[in-house]
Image 1 (cartoon, helix red, strand yellow):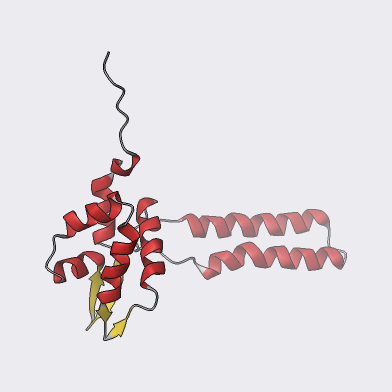
Image 2 (cartoon, helix red, strand yellow; image 1 turned 120 degrees about the vertical axis):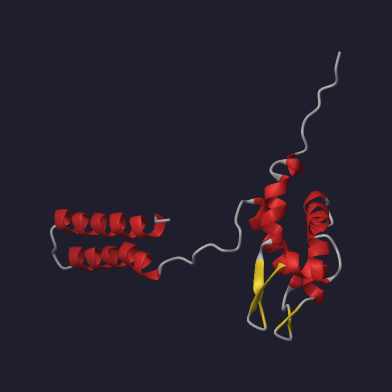
Amino acid sequence: MDPIIQPDPRDLNLDARIGRLAGWPLGTDGGEVVTVGDLIEKAGDDAVAIGRRILRTDGGPAELGNILRRARLDGEACPDPDGLAVMILSSVRNGRTGHERPADKGAIALILVPSVIAGLGLAGGLSPYLAALLVGAGWVVGWKLLRRD
């Protein structure tokens, strides 16, 4: 009987996660964007090998924290290297790249403002049907703006 071999969950999409980790933007230095991979290579190491070790071992957050601790971007040290390391690794493991768009404040306003207006209108005697229409339209348009790619 052959033994049951289960794949290590840390190996799932490992190459893609290494790429996301190496490409994670940290900031700029002299007008140039600096990534985690740039810091690793600047230290004279192979970004893929170090990335694999960071993602595969339990000491990965501490190792990434040490890399960030040594980094200087525009002459400034990283304010919280250990916290940033945990955040980066969590994001990389969940498929984010660090290049995501920030939330569109106009879209969020289209979701929230009609609700407030409808609530105030209901208090002032506005028809519940009109209030529901106002809130629904704001939500539909706001969510479409937030979900656009």
